[in-house]
Amino acid sequence: MNSKTRLLLADDHALVRKGLRLILSQEPTFEVVAEASHGREAVSMVRTHRPDVVVMDVAMPHVNGVTAVRTILEEEPQCRILMLSMHRDAAYVRESLRAGAKGYLLKDAVDHELVTAVKALADGHAYLSPAVSNTVLADYRQHVSDATDLTAREREVLQLLAEGLTAKEIAKRLDISAYTVDAHRSRLMRKLQISSIGELVRFAMRNGLIT
Image 1 (cartoon, rainbow, N blue to C red):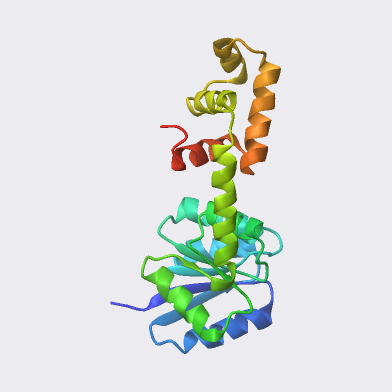
Image 2: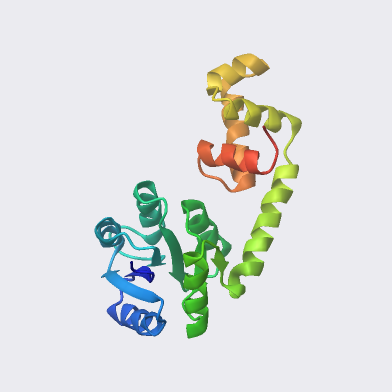
């Protein structure tokens, strides 16, 4: 029985992949089973090789890393994905984690941090590069702050959206126009920095705004 952690490396730069392979191959419990040069290839390689952990660049051609993560996890939900990026902005980290990635590591991280991150994911844990942890925490606090700033009407609309009502049905229930419902929904998404109804409902449930 092979007890090694099987890895797939996905980055559009061959030199970067070579460096990653060199670092990770020195760890006796790791085995690099495949490489991919773009997101579409990464999805295909996961189907073929079924790695335990994927080290995925955020920005890649054809299909970007975040989209590739969503596709991979739909098909292989047990796969654990570590995003590798030069971007430390909260937006990149947030989108990666929303897509289902379990870790986010900056490309300028030292060698041992890459090994530590992969080991963490292999053991079922999450990993955030210390350099982005404060950014993520500040982003979370801002989201919570925005959530507590919702008006009573916005909370009503949020509750009904969560129950699956349409704008017309909500308008009838609250005795307002469908246009007003749409305006409330747009404000909710803007305040919470969320781009879809599904994300809006999940955020509200996570933060106890709805049951």
